Image (cartoon, rainbow, N blue to C red):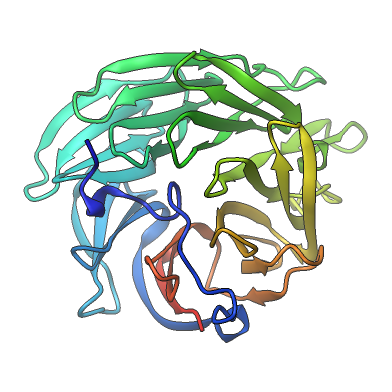
Length: 353
């Protein structure tokens, strides 16, 4: 059974179909912004309803009606008592994750809580949904990947294998997760730069590899393990995996390092492309914009917020756009003409080309 079109998050499960000759990231233009309290860590674009939803540090749901954009997003109702880290919409129900270690199902029309499920033994870092809307997947600081029935809330499987500590014995974290477009594979990435790709049906790893440039251990100044995989995305055919984060950190106190993306042939366990830029930022989110060749990644750091566009012809991004504040997540509309960001102080709406 297919999900309602409004339940598909184009930033997570379905690359946008774009004419390469028409897509010009140098024309990216901020057209409006909508404030929300604190920081939004996640969002959901309901294209059928022409609305943008987000949640974050205040635990509440915020909404922008894209047919009548105002200066401030509308605050709806609480989803959690702590930071909200993931948000998807399936038919008329929101599913959300939080640092409170639970998943919540909330009626999208009334705000009434349908169910709350204890999910992880640590902070939940990210939540994604399969393209058919049947499963949601979470990762948490207990270093586990969990698969859930999106309708009933039933736990379907737990995928364990990420180490709880970095190679130097410091606490790790599991930041990022992605589901392949056909739903057969899940990718997860941790602080130490390890990526695992899981066979959903078999419930075991299909591949694993370490992306060392995303991890920094400073044994001299602060004895800190920092960095990690912050964003993951499968290509349309599921054969390639985009990875985003921060390159080697030169100042651990200021978390200063270059923004970085890599693309891997995950089945062959080999890198295909590495993109780096001197802009000092961690890229929290990455997507394949189309079958080939564009990728978009966004985040922020000491160098301010950034949206970076790579066509994989050069290690340097073809264009950098400067959003207001740090970006935590973003998504595209179905024709990749609008890009929506969520982050510090709310939403931003960008026109592309």
